[in-house]
Length: 224
Image (cartoon, rainbow, N blue to C red):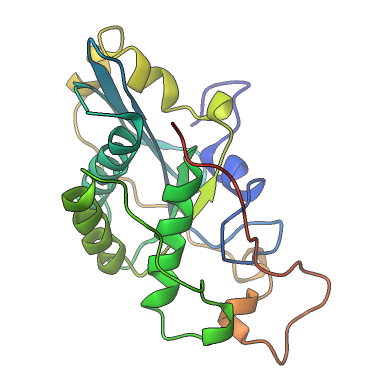
């Protein structure tokens, strides 16, 4: 389970905006959640990832040293790593919630999801997000992982609440988490009544329920 007193990734996801995608402020019918973070320092940074099942059971934690050219590339590398680790431990029909503290990365992920969903064009982003220079190969890997899961969407969380932040910023202090044995967790079945109503992009616009907000057009700034 999640550490005592610390919110589960599911709770963080439910309370955070998902750029371009509307959702009810309850569970999003995810099976697994992955939070990632990348840090950049001139003398070396790191990559961190935390994966939990929907009930808060921890699946994996990763903390690796890494030297990226800038913070943007570090964030893309971290998500690529987190999705690779997740894919090795979960079935392909898993529904995944991604948590990152990088505005443009969250928007790019959801834009890619909508672009490949075949849903109502009115709810899609007006254009593809610009991928930071040096992140192109990692973005291709991220897109391949997005396509490999049954469903995926990303939420933008505050960096101070990101449980992957300390793993990325102090990989030397958290090297022990990488030595823990791999585990695959089969989440509890999702109750039909726990999923909440279909989201706007899943229903189309004609029958949209007015009690839920329109898609979150999160206009944040990119990390420096």
